[in-house]
Image 1 (cartoon, helix red, strand yellow):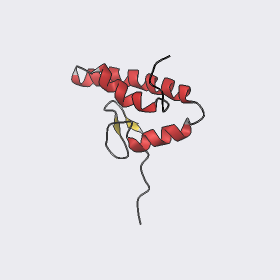
Image 2 (spheres, rainbow, N blue to C red):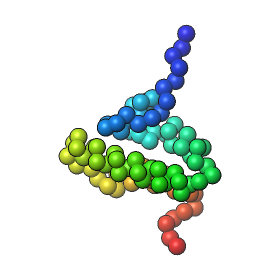
Image 3 (cartoon, rainbow, N blue to C red):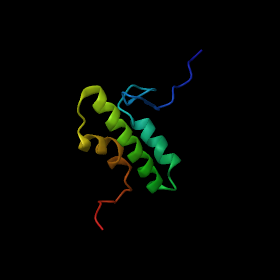
Image 4 (tube, rainbow, N blue to C red):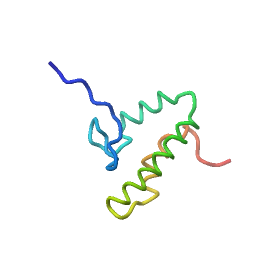
Length: 88
């Protein structure tokens, strides 16, 4: 009998995936988020931005430093709409 798959959710304050142990959001979590928010990319970015701030606070308390650019890439950059280069 196999065990049910563990959901790919963040384990706070380490911000590792409960399901696979990778940095969260891991690839399966990213895919699930893109599916869940497929009709509202702006809401996804707001949600991820909120989590990024929480992660930054918690990770800096754990290890004393966090590189904002690393967190932006981890939480936000991948979720931008395809073809979006940030220019107006």
